[in-house]
Image 1 (spheres, rainbow, N blue to C red):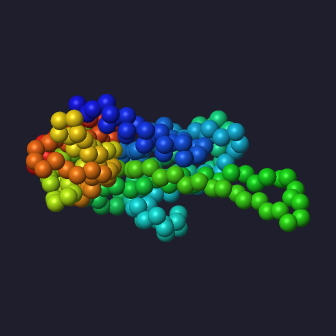
Image 2 (image 1 turned 45 degrees about the horizontal axis):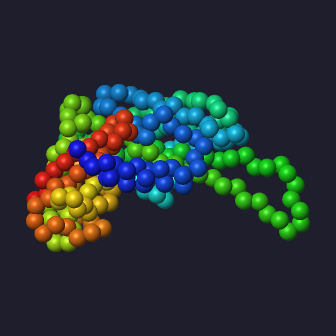
Image 3 (image 1 turned 180 degrees about the vertical axis):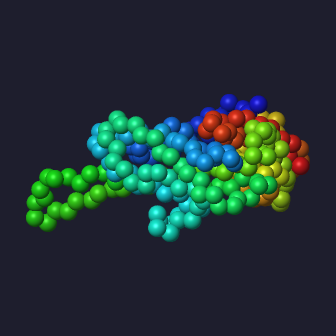
Length: 239
């Protein structure tokens, strides 16, 4: 099991991020799992602002510079633009266009929610200007082949951690995208935190610890995010 200290540190990071974010339009969950064979999925959105907003939606392949007109993805959100009044909830539909996707691994795309507040009708004095702040939120949309439907929750337990000089190499030998929320190398009472990382299928990543790794031995205690957006705990031998 992960130490209480590790969970406290990671929870603090999550809360800090939540305080920095001011998205008034929120979704019912943090990710959408789109299973092969389905033509569409849905996601409930609610406007928690005290004012109405216009919401523009699109799905892209992770390019931060992608715009609705240039986004590349085999999934399409409907409606692409809509008004959401204060406290109003609306269902967003995600449609599969039928493009061929890999069947031996998951595919990852990003749903963009672009929130545009209303402009004030108040008049401005001479020399004054008005700034309208828009907000773009992204969330994961994972296309999961039918053959991978049963083993998703076990995949994070198969992560491999190895020393690589002063760093640590983490390998994801599975066909799933694994969101590593954080980790810690432990030996006795000493711990060395590791950064969070998104691990694509069949990939390796180098993680740099904030403190020196133990010369030998030790184990890695880590948290990952499951399909429901909840954190789960795991341990692995440091090789």
